[in-house]
Image 1: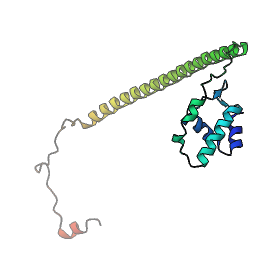
Image 2: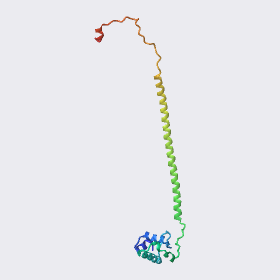
Image 3: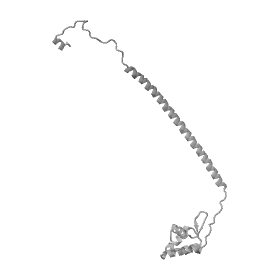
Image 4: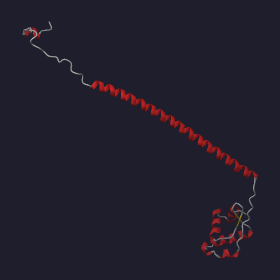
Length: 174
């Protein structure tokens, strides 16, 4: 019987059966998957443990049970080399190689893409630098003070000024 069947028989949970086996260090058989396998003798021992616990005995006080039975070894089936398993392993290896190849291809593509972007940015920086130099030259030309040409001088000796009367100066627009 397996653990769940024994648990149903005794009216407890499967984890309770597993805990009893571990805490009391009962030498139970295990199958090739590591699951407990109980025979009639094992079930009788577990029934007695269950009765003692129902009567108020603490699990730490149920130590004599370990000595009644000698440890048994689990029956393990030898692992046979299987062609299907080998085929599966080779397929996994092939897939890993393909995966690494794909990953390398993706990384290479990304590097090329980044390189193109960097080259485009460098071209833009160069163009902006040239424009800045051009504007700087234009600005420098505008800021150079013009050489003073002939200064404007008002010479009173060249001509006589006409005197205007006050009324005509006020209403000079007429």
